[in-house]
Amino acid sequence: MVGQMVCHKAVSGEDLVDVALHYRLGVDHLAFANGFPITTLDVAEDTPIFIPCWRILPANPPRNGFVINLAERILYLFKNGKFVRFYPISIGDESAEKGRFQTPTGNYSIIEKIKNPTWYPPSWAKDRRPVGPGPNNPLGERWIGLSLPRTGVHGTNDPLNIGNSVTHGCMRTHPALLRELYDSVEVGFVARIEYETAKLGKGPDGSLYLANFPDVYKKSPSVKAAQRLLQRAHVKPARDNFNELLKLQLGVPLKIKGTGSAFDEWSKASGTDVSE
Image (cartoon, rainbow, N blue to C red; front, side, top):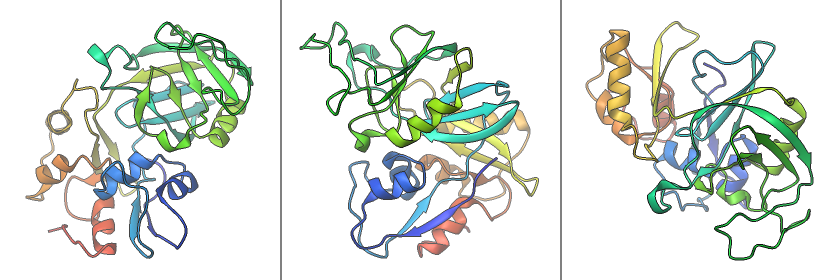
């Protein structure tokens, strides 16, 4: 597990887009963790906002490359066998007809890097004219192309959608973060895309933690996925309300036995103590 929990108090003049970018997350990450509607942007001054920066790393990561968990909307970067940092991403649209824009899972690699790319509209676009570099280019300033045809990680001219399921299969992140990622990866790096609606990890105190995420593609109900992980680990939650917390799909690491989870600390800070 990496990162730390943060309880941020909203200040005058900022919205959830500002807060999310500051903490390298998407608006949806904040919405899930705090129980906000995903359309929420404005919050009242002094509102406590739990920032889910404490994450469970993917299992068996590559030595050089990244792992994307679509359900989590997070990209994890690794170099020289070590975790570097994570990035919030938008993923393929779950509501598109017959799921034809869902981002596929699989093992791929980076095959190209392009600065100031030109966007060539695919067959579904109404206007098929290419869009050159500039503010109207939906690819933003950088393109990291994968061995998965017509799919890559890129910037965006609409940062509001970072962390959402709105794309036609590609993955977007904040322009500033994409420039950082672009400079950190090389052609040939591994690009593994998976769909894990529940993850199990060991915290610095040696305790097991579990986080689950909304089943956006309707492939793996997250509460059942979480329960399967618990069965495989041969552990049983000590708290009576653990399954109720799983149903909230907060994307927050929950301590399986005892109190002291990220959610407990957030709930106390926000005045809604559900640790018992």
